[in-house]
Length: 246
Image (cartoon, rainbow, N blue to C red; front, side, top):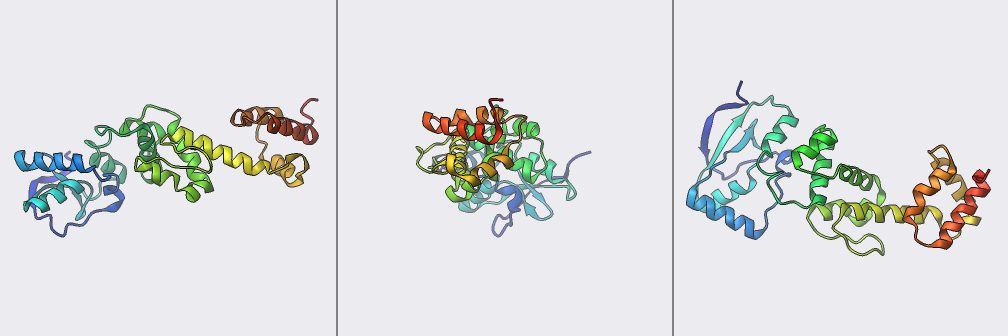
């Protein structure tokens, strides 16, 4: 059974209303790419209809804008109003997600949003977005859960393809590096200025230990810490609180 209602039709683009939940995934094109699309439509016409569900447009932001600028109608087609959101977002993005030359970081953020807003599994989101790194959605998820995402506006900045500066670390466009920098700041905050004399820190460690031994916890953390003196302080603290040498 067809997922569409009727045949494509032409509609005046003036005053069309978009469903932001879906159309926001159709992020703005660069000026160069937009001009190329406009020239293509002006010369060859619009080949792909925009999608309409329940009177709202789900995709085609740029095609509608071009049609308005050219003084033309826009080609549209209705989808069934009861089409599930997960199926509709996939249909809206069938020609945009994988086909665009997104960075791995932007792909990871888009894929994460698919899991949050449309109940995609990580595997489904990676497939639809074309994301190859199996760990990248996890990096985004970790950053999203951190207070530092809001402090430094990390994900919103990276989603635009811009570099983000986190604390005193160098600007980066990499979701993996951003996640690592957030982890460093969180660990520095946890350790404080003098972990050996910080009773509250010891209590925090007691709450945070999730692995079988404190030794495991240390070896998970130490890879992010380059200062040798800080590593020694952590070892000493864990020896006092957890007797990890016994």
